[in-house]
Length: 239
Image 1 (cartoon, rainbow, N blue to C red):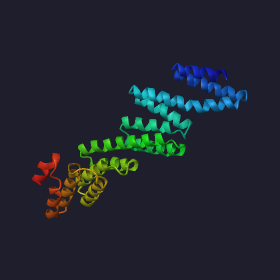
Image 2: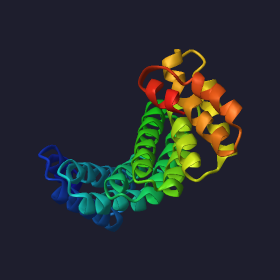
Image 3: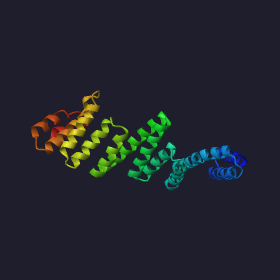
Image 4: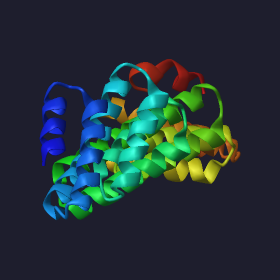
């Protein structure tokens, strides 16, 4: 138990690398002297230390080392939701959307299995935010297909988010997928039933663009009329 106690002291003094080494020695000598309790406690602690180390790297913008530490935590304890949560955060900083989504998916699955409702809500909220933000950025770049990948992934974490459906409608209009754009905008309107007319205007504007793209100018005019609120007044009147 000596190495375990030294490891605890090192951790309290924020000497995480040394603490990990001491806990590994605790496991080694626990096996040698048949001390299953110490082995179990050390094995349970090491992934938490790698997670803490990953957090330190992440806060200091050292994302490659953060990725390494979170990966070690996940490898040692594949049922540890926070390890995958850390991976998701780091992959977002590295602009690796597929692995970010994969990591958040796993983190959410494990948080549910752990019965950690607070962590579950935190993961879903952050994953939605990051994926929606990535999708919006790709919309600005007119990377319509890339935007849809991010936005549809965002909906996996928050399927009732009206703004995400608006962005999906924008992307589909960019791709000239008129029916898909209309469907997304109408879904957004359903989610916005309690909102004011100014909030709903953006959905009608995208419906107008899609219907116009299909060649139905009469229905397009009807939609643009309902979009004449707030910042869209001038654009809708022009259409």
